[in-house]
Image: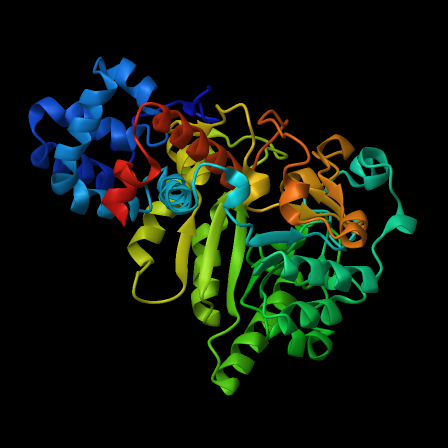
Length: 471
């Protein structure tokens, strides 16, 4: 079985312990807490968190049984250090470790067979790449060159009708799906039946998240407000502060005041939520750092705080559609993250979330790369295209990276036949060999690969040291 490993980032590799002062503090705490003979084991646990037992035992020149024994000794002395480290903004594997803890818990409860895990989340792509912008980091930045007609052989005549979408919602509900993410395929707000579809999902008791640019929302605020206020979470994509700067990143498309417009829309949501005394939907910004806006991280956080938003998510180009950072870019990112660490408070909004890949690229740490042979993401978060094709993940539902060879089933056929979602997910093996893979998907595959490999050596999912340290 292939294993997860760390690979070169788009920068020079550095030890995670030398990236910034706080990481050096964590290193010192671990050194002081751990017996000298077990220090290599303790450091490896956090330097290579998804490395399987066999590979790690070979690298450390210890038998797997001895390594498991060492983990048992380390648990009482590492608990506080582990929690503090994983909560640190500058630990480049925080998301990976937390996802591993979640997945190992799922396997411990439901067993090793992925089809028994119980699918709870599905992503829906509603539109055909329709958007008023042409952001360079978008999967649709090259327009028709990667269209559904090219990759899937389908056009507008094959789109799901509103009635068929409602039938899909019934089928998802009958199969136990409780969470829906509306994103991808372009801008959801441009779908003519979006409000109706969101209401149908909420009426079925599903928790719905929406990812949107907010394009044109201010003009249609009252049209959408009622439906959008029923959602669990709304993430607005905002990639620069100021109209001129933001419009340049949008490809010069859209209105001349895109930043002012989206801020006005977000402010209206916050005000309406206060008036209704509701805590939902949670509202925040999704910011993608790229060459051209690396000077904007602190400013975008300040905007989120000034508007009273709940969260600010900072990401990098996860599938490398933009150019790599220059050395100057990385220096600006480092300084911005250090400044954000000083400004951010865990007890006051907005919550700040920084992706592992952004931290790794900013400081030149190794990134987690794929190492498994089989993809398991379809069992946890598959996606549905505008034509009703069930794809194994969100990228596989986008024509830039997906195609009919990855299709698990047609929603139309499933609804008519009454086949279960388990049958559909098991209908085709998906290999972990796609051209690109989102970080969440990479982490899921690496986590499951490690869990399965370790189980063969007698270490069950529920006994994984990271799970025991962090739960």
